[in-house]
Image 1 (cartoon, rainbow, N blue to C red):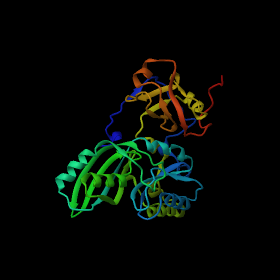
Image 2: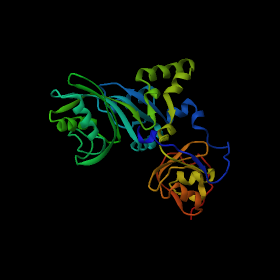
Image 3: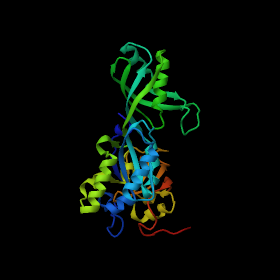
Image 4: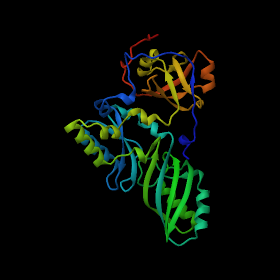
Length: 328
């Protein structure tokens, strides 16, 4: 399993306070117009176009000015590509935290026995060293990435079908090349498909054609069902992160870049440790900001003074909740 699938979180109560319906709303009750302005589409990317081109097509389909993508896929690679709409782009860095899963085909350059392949696969599980390929957007220097699992599925002649769960930033093309070197025969990646990213799976994905049809049906006869499936609230990007629930009175301060002080905490997840990436949300479940934990869950429950979370990236527009704080 990927790390985010192996966590059993429990919501802990620090302060039993109520929220009001006068401001804010449940993310899953937003109108389609609001989702188009600040939502996410999980696209099943076809082979051929770049991730940037696919993002541009989504902009054209929905008639919006801004869209981004998370976890770039090479042109020939297919599978899950989250497309953020409008202001939801601020949340895209959350996808850099947590693992991804791929199913791929590796072509061996010579014949080799199955047991030898399985043996080498086990050696490439855990922490590995990688150098990004020449055609990459990052600096070519040795770095460490973690392979959570690398499963041999089947083989046909020199083609090997495999499934890999890995840390964000792992190059599967490089992994195949390195496995070929370890086998002493050479190998390269033939095909690749991403099947999981963050909390997203293939069950959530739509094709470009699905999205276009759903949008046209909504525009022409106000049929919402298909478009509601395609457009998800921005908060879905945060599903795999531990959460800190913020009191209504502290929300606007965080929207202005303030850190979350302990008196502003209403609830929290049980598995937070110091320096963890954490999503701050309202009591209605709206994403406020991404931050870094200064304390673990037990300390946050015990203490009444200090900073619980250092704010790193604000997601919510200021003024969504009333200003109930003062500048010192």
